[in-house]
Image 1 (cartoon, helix red, strand yellow):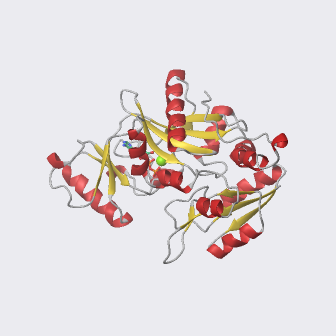
Image 2: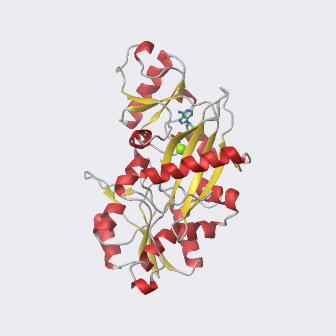
Image 3: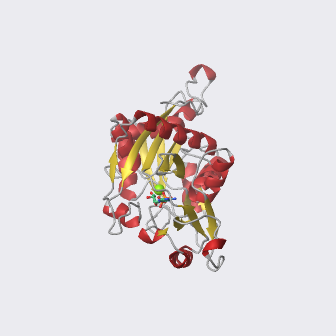
Length: 339
Ligand SMILES: Nc1ncnc2c1ncn2[C@@H]1O[C@H](COP(=O)(O)OP(=O)(O)O)[C@@H](O)[C@H]1O
Ligand SMILES: [Mg+2]
């Protein structure tokens, strides 16, 4: 079966998807080891995508959400391939927007009863004193739509109005977007990799992430920590907590309408209550460092190849399901909770 892996030069993008070309090549090598013929396509333009369509792959694996086109709107790959009748991995454009825009996800989930930190969005000068702020200090400030810890550092944690004003100003000028201001949650953090099995059942791989303590005594997964790779991923031993984390991640995945795979970040407060933090629906796939394959390995002892096999499972089931019914063994995600 012929499969293409689609990416774009993404070093300058705020959201990098599976990761660099190295990450994409690791995915491709696994695909080949699994016995499929595969090609990596570095697409820059709509014409590049048109060429992919002409080659009629049975499945395209989308390593990025969209291709930026100069002076035009981004081309969202899931939308483009859906329009051209090509089977693709991952979620639809509408659902991927929940990954790109944290407030969209938080509002949608809060509306469906899923807990997330209290928040508001702010631009400079919008509030003139502490008493006007919709949520009380301590607060945590971050970009609305960045990833990989960009814009996040010790100054994201603010306890007074002056520090609040200066972090809002710096994030606003760097990202040209209103700033997401959240209630600061002082517990621990977790991430859950989610895969789908052939029968549609979900497999959850939860882990705790422990960032190093900064000179200010904070544990934050900011850009520097991620670059230095100095955080630790560890198995969750407390089974009651683990089950609550898995349940929140799977409820989130289903409530967002995500498909095939995704990584859900969760944070707790001091009392141990779990809150949705963000959804990564095109998660990093760098062999050896990315959270997604690492979490699958810690939680289930899955090899990198096994993780990639699971990554393809939903898409391959859709290929099979286009065959006559007597040969149809695949189905869409059934969204069954797998504990
Ligand atoms: N409300 C919050 N309270 C405490 N820490 C937070 C909060 N929101 C984010 N963080 C810290 O900032 C990190 C990055 O936030 P996140 O929303 O996951 O952004 P990114 O997309 O950059 O990963 C988290 O992993 C966590 O360490
Ligand atoms: Mg995150």
